Amino acid sequence: MLSIEQAREMRQGVSLKGDRNQCGECGELFNSVYAFDKHRIGTVGVHEGPAARRCMSLIEMRFYGMAKNNFGFWVTDRMSVEDIQQKNSVIAARDSTLETTAGRCR
Ligand SMILES: [Zn+2]
Image (cartoon, rainbow, N blue to C red; front, side, top):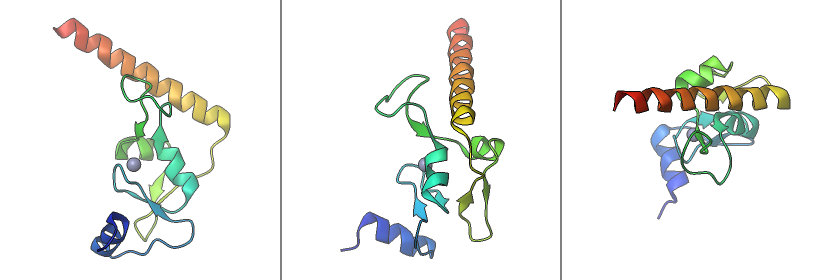
């Protein structure tokens, strides 16, 4: 029996060597653990609400300067801690705005 990771690897025809990895949530491929960590936002251990831990969407990843390399792996420039904190607060603010708007519609 293949593990899920092995099956995914075979299906996509890619090899995950060195620092490369694949997200178990969204299935995207990352060229480094750093790039993988960058696409996981929110607070670890929180499962609901604006602060919930989740993957960034493809649009969000591009917005924050990530891009796919020629092999189909996401890569990123390194971000400072301040950048990451600002990113999280921007997303949290946006999500709470969306909830407020949705509330008004009901
Ligand atoms: Zn993901």
